Image (cartoon, rainbow, N blue to C red; front, side, top):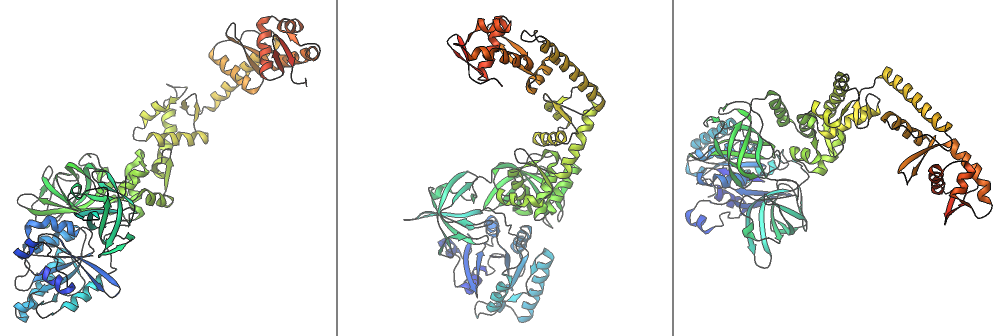
Length: 623
């Protein structure tokens, strides 16, 4: 994808027509006035390679159009007329290209037939010097051309072929993103949109989302260079036939994206570079943000300084007057509205940010590291920047500008901890949290000997996400470093715990012995909290059996020895005759109804006996 840039009336459209045979001035007004107003599109096949060409308007009034055309191109073809040299829009177009990260350049000197050979040579040298100082990397020396006799056209085609396969700024994000530059209707087909596919792959019949509106539609068909295709790849110019939407519902500035991945935001955290020669930029300035095919007023908020001088870089936030929707790592341009001028550009670091504190060294260090990172390093830095707050998988994908699936696939390569709810944190941060918790609890052991609740513990580490705190506590408890009882967490106290365990064992023995000695008429169980805990433990261990007196609505506890005695006593009587009445069973055991009824109901419950009318029959043989 090559964008043709340069000053108005320097022969860009004529050059494209001479190279491709395609007239990119399609509008009647363009042909009448002799200048390009809208983006023009052409393509050229060179051997096995196909090159898309975007002819960009050169007039200063159409810089916004030029920026939308530059979105997604791989290289620029810079046009300078030999008889005029570098002009103001030449400079602004090159500034915009460099700010968008497009530095590979083919330098073409047009109208060489209008000047003498030595003047053409001087213009070429000046052009090369300007391009290199501006930050472009020419693929060859400037090529002098004339469309009148075809001079230099083959050399231009050869230079274009040389750019194919070179390094580009396209991110393999795993999700589709296409800023829409045109929307129109075709009779019998419905709505068609066109644009440059910035990221991911588009598939025919796939669902796609219109952002920032959030409306989902389906792709009916795709075309590349007028040919119907099943899918489109990043960097291709694509025409997309959409179902279920009218062209009027797709104004300039919307984009198509993978459903559910991008959301509007008023705040963007960005890495910013100021244009050399532009006016200084100050916090609170109002600027025009240009990205994709959209333009939005924003207020500048510098994070690491108060003034951004020309040629410098900075960390900043942009506060938009309305929500904007774009992926992380996407490039943008900033312009002054009046007098109109390009002043800066950069990349989005966080497309769904919150307002950050200015002049915060730690925050700025993290943002610089995030800006410098590439590949998996972007994911690592995003996780490190989050610290103990952690990131969900969708949040991490948003910061990296990747699909959740692509992010998920990268996680095994990262040194992270994954907690409940897919909360992710750096291992070093998580281990610091695990080291801090025992110290914090130990410092408060005297004041809170029983321990602290999770809610109270969270107030001691407010920077930690609840899911990460829970995960740290779980691992520390599993390792024996912490104890968790009754919802309270504390540090172990070996001496106290041994003494406590001994006291509890002695209490359990006393309670069990008292109930055992009571036989089938056991004493009422004590109702204090320590005794209740020990009785519950004895029931769970099978030493005691809990039954219930429904009349008095109270529990009755029998020792297991008493239950065995009752079974042995009743078994011979239950085997003969028609079973036993409650009164008869009580007489045989020597107990009142207060104990015989709960006992017999327990035996019914364990299917030792079965009640038929008022009598009990034996179900299981006595062991």
